[in-house]
Length: 552
Ligand SMILES: Nc1ncnc2c1ncn2[C@@H]1O[C@H](COP(=O)(O)OP(=O)(O)OP(=O)(O)O)[C@@H](O)[C@H]1O
Image (cartoon, rainbow, N blue to C red; front, side, top):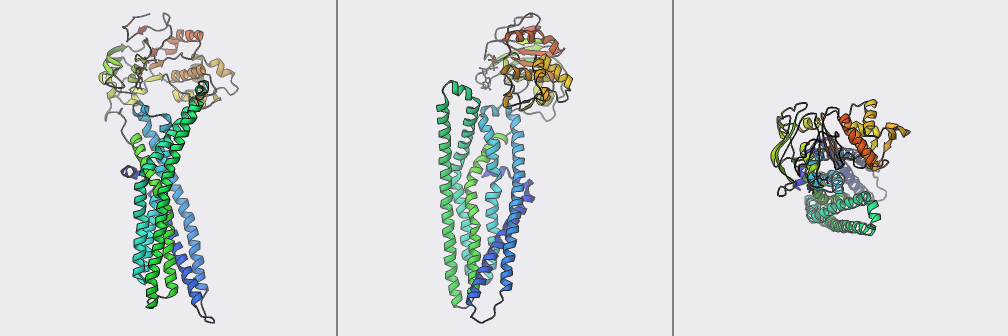
């Protein structure tokens, strides 16, 4: 539950709407109690009135109508305000999770599967945001409204009030607490299984062609089947526990009725109360128990919500590994890039770079080459400070990049990574990510440089052509070139290109690499490539994993 408590600030921010919903929920329950109590009293009084004796029908019947009207209105208002506040809470939580998640991209996020991350931002947030509506509000309602009913009953028949207080407290607090404790394990299993299921779906969609080609559909189906079966088992466990809780609450309601009838009949015999009042007490108490139904459903959810809160806190509640200093040093507009005796490994025990040094002067065009898996992309990751070095320093214009603000550093680097995605939207939307203020001419120029100009010109909607999820309407090479155009649009003094020509045919690749000097336009350019480089394409080829080969 402490994980749930961690998110109290979000509930506090929506306190107005949530408290109004709680107030209306109390009014609904009290109106229900008054409605049943008055009806019980009214029907019994009518039945007990001897024939021929006058009885005022209008007062009680208008009270019954009035209470039922109040109940309807209060229930409507409670649903409206409760769901409104919950939806606002949902949005707050999603935005918070998303914005906390992005800075983790360099480190912790990499360890999670895509489906798991989606699951946390969607399913876990949903499990958490319904906590108030389905668990806290019903419990608080029964305690508040039940307290008032107990106080009223105390005036008429204290023994009946004590019975109601005891049984209702057990139903609203003790049984839910037991249900929450018992459903913690199946709740956790349910959240984990739901996450695995999302991962299985995403993996199958992304790898659909490969699964078909390698006859892997049966294995994918089996994996999906086993996660859904796990989900089913966890859900069944949860339902069994809350059904047991509901049965106990029903038994408590029966016990309350029997107890009140016992003391009520004694009081009736002693003429301390009248028959109609006893009927009113019995039915009013029953109405209190009516509100314990949602508590049981909510208590089952609390286990899952607590597990979801733990996973969310784990993902987004911790500080990112890479953080700006309190007072970052401003970076020069441009400057030399230096790797000064850098040691780094994703697993510190197995360094990818050991005592690695490199210096690239402003405006220089260099290529970094080396065998696959040697650490070329790692050098670029460190330059962007997606990870921090374990020894040595990376400097920009003489300033250790750990002393600068990350945003300042990133503003100086236009980057095309190996996994750069095409985003859902138009070609123009994708280009704007590189150059938010780029005009049509600049966009077309960048597309020409990325050798995509003719293709875009052939599209009926040109720059406004919609490209589907992960660039589905583009070929792999076209998608890559669009990402390249996006990087070229970024007005940064350093251009970092990781395998920019992958996906291009050899003629286009050669033409592109020959154009690089013009494309760089005086910027520093770092190119990681496996392509054969001709003289003049870059000024220096660095082979850090085999010694420097010198200028070409
Ligand atoms: N996120 C990561 N977590 C753990 N290890 C990683 C990670 N990224 C890369 N590595 C490992 O670090 C080493 C260097 O990887 P890197 O991607 O820098 O190589 P590369 O020279 O760019 O390879 P390629 O030419 O194939 O792209 C590899 O052994 C790789 O397995």
